[in-house]
View 1: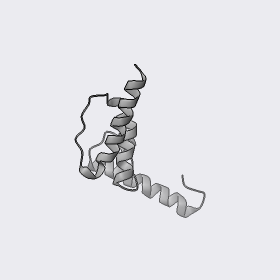
View 2: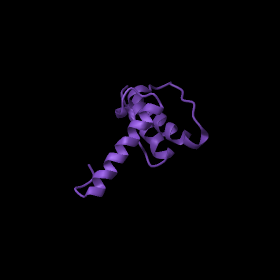
View 3: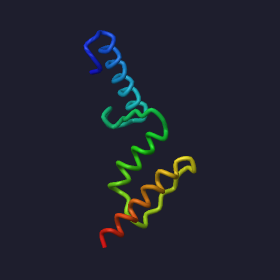
Length: 87
């Protein structure tokens, strides 16, 4: 909920309705699987540093668009540093 004013309550309802519509469109199991970000860079950062930190291991390769490869390269360097520090 964004506030106590009627317009903020309506904005919250509309926002959550949009999340449900997107979930149905992409055939998600739940609206809880849908995350809105401000832009593609923010979305890729979210994926790289949430999913990637828990699923990628040193030696894994990631294919990516050139525009977003920097995020994966940073994560790869972090994994290498983490791997080296655990030796």
